[in-house]
Structure formats: C-alpha cells, structure tokens
Image (cartoon, rainbow, N blue to C red; front, top):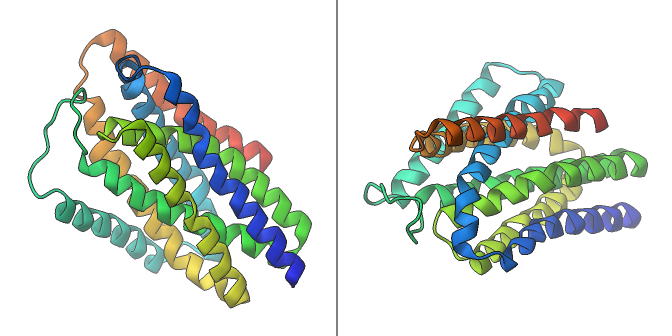
Length: 248
C-alpha cells in the first residue's frame, strides 16, 4: 500500500507541474501576446467542450449515464452560474485590451481546480487497481493537461491577471490533484461513487465556461479573417481532445 501511495503522489505532483508550462510566455511582450489571446481563448473553448463530450461523458458511462447524471450536469451549470453571479457584482463589458480581472477568469480557476481534483481521483484509483494502469493513466492525464494548461493560462491573462499571477494561480489550482489523490487513496473502492457525482458537475462547469463566457467573447471579433482563424483554433482544440483518444 505504501508503494501505491508513493506512485500516486509522485504522479499527481508531475501532473501539477504541467501547470507551469505557461512560463515560456513570460519572455513575450504583453502587447504582442494580446494579439494571440483571442485565438488561445478559441482553442481553450474547443478543448473544454471536447474534453467534456469526448472524455468526461464517456468516463461517466462506466457507471451509467442516468437521470441523476443529467441532473448533476445541470447542477454543475447552475453552481457555476451562481458563483459567477456572486463574483460579478456588476456587469463586465470591458474590452479585451483592458487590464481588468474578468469574472470568467475566476470561474475558470474554480472549474480547473475541480477538474484537477478529479484527475487526482482517477490517477490514484488507477494505481489502486495496479501500478501499470496507474502509470498509463498518468501519461494520458499529462498529455491531456498540456494543451489545457496553456489554454487556462491564456484565459487568465485575457481575464486581466498579470503573467506572474496567472502562472502562480494556475499552479495552485493544479495542486488540487494531490488532494484528489489523497481522498481516493483514503476511501479506496468508494472513489467510484464520488466520481459519479463530481464528473458530471465538472462537465456542467466546463460547458458553462465555454458556452456562457468564452464563446461570447469570440463573437466580439467580427473581422472575417480573424473569425476564420478563431474557428480554426476552436476546431483545433476539439481535434487535440479527439487525438488523445489514441493513447487511452
């Protein structure tokens, strides 16, 4: 059992470090980076929806997609709607070039924390089955996290955070994977019951972030050329999630 704990905690620590991938952008001038932020948002929106429909929903089918599952998805949307209402004390229509912390950036942090928590649950649960399965699951999660973390970093920059703060907050939210692993290891076989609730709630949260916050931001750009580039980035985000199926 000690070996399972060691493998699990090392694995989720590695996954958490993936959140620092955004550090490569620190050498890029902010104004230059802003020109590409809208495309990073498009990529992230595609990745979030792709992750939900291609990865999370199929995983939910392992314990059955029932009426309760559908209600939990709706609950996730409602929860994130309520959270945003509390955060967004006044309507925010600031241009994307302004230094202003948009509510969707905070919402994304909450959603990403829950998603990373679930990653930790899944990784540790895999190690409880056997170590090879745990290693394979960790590799899949790492490859899954790379595009997502880049997108999350872009969302926070777009939301008004400085590069340093965005990087730090992205890393802090990634640490919830460690908490998820600990919970899974402590409760053992009951982890499936927790996943049957957390997975649909996370799915609802990601649908809300992509549909209510990110996509409306993309529609603010009306130039045909840049709109087509947004569409390409959006489809690329979905495509990356599809390609990840090849390693699962």
